Length: 101
Image 1 (cartoon, one colour):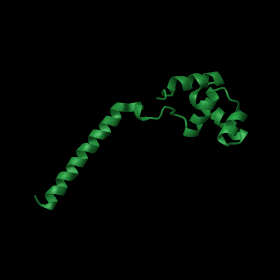
Image 2 (cartoon, one colour; image 1 turned 45 degrees about the horizontal axis):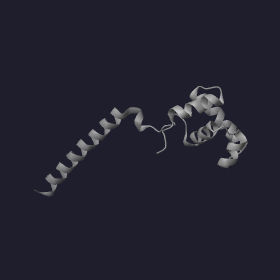
Image 3 (cartoon, helix red, strand yellow; image 1 turned 60 degrees about the vertical axis):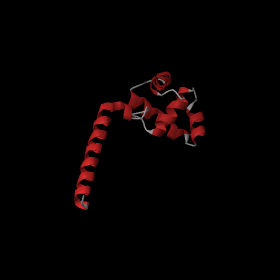
Image 4 (cartoon, one colour; image 1 turned 90 degrees about the vertical axis):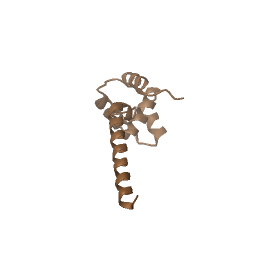
């Protein structure tokens, strides 16, 4: 087999593999998304601490943020998840976060 034929065969094989992987991702749907979608990773951290019952001041101290930044994160979490109370956020975390093994 000459080099050109080999490269064509390899390219075709890669195209088939890529198509199969794309189809797999489409079938998986939301399972490929992180548990905390639509939140950012930082908002997920804030959510977890909020679910533990920490105040905004305590969350800010733990994450090395200002209290004002933490307040903004909490408000953005409420808006993104369409929630109104901290207990609702805690329930959301319990329902969506995978169990650690």
